[in-house]
Length: 270
Image (tube, rainbow, N blue to C red; front, side, top):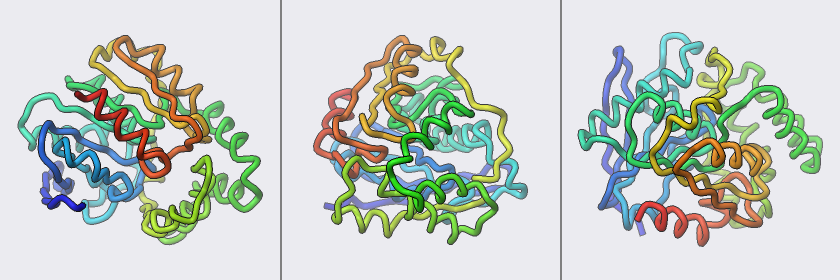
């Protein structure tokens, strides 16, 4: 079933940031990953039956505005634009759900602003050489085409080229790729400008104890990108967190194992 979706716009530094709302009940703000992946890939209709879902359409993607300089797509700027959305909602601290790179944004946000709770979904407190090396090692079994696409994705590309790379890699992000996921793959889009952000190294491990809000760390046991080792680091560092490993699941649990993912999120948020 489809809930009615309303679209809203906030503006910061002359750049428009769109967001979309659907559902009813307590507010949960969802931030997609990439950076640069279309917000629609994180639409969570089953949650809309219980929550007012607010989907950020990140700057640099879709119909949201573009920064004048691609170097500006940094976590700190994503946090600033996310905060503009939260201020526009005008409800006080919110529940944040961040997937993958969106989890980085959620964590950085929680270090700067009060939050009601965090759902940290297939994400990590750190990136860098070990993180990316781990991902490449986990994708070795996926075959040369996927490995080549994954390791070349930071080459300067158009939106269409990067979307092609994402759609090539996507089956490896699932524990068990099945034909019914093809429609999700076909709909996946990514914009290339955010991948050219010039950010400082991301590592919030030392600061995790500062985040005292309740946090659900949820991860697929077969996630090749932000898998259990990174989730455990989050769980160990966050004082009010619980860790949930979803078995036989990759990087996109809400598509691959919705029957486990959604009840876990709702149980936590109730």
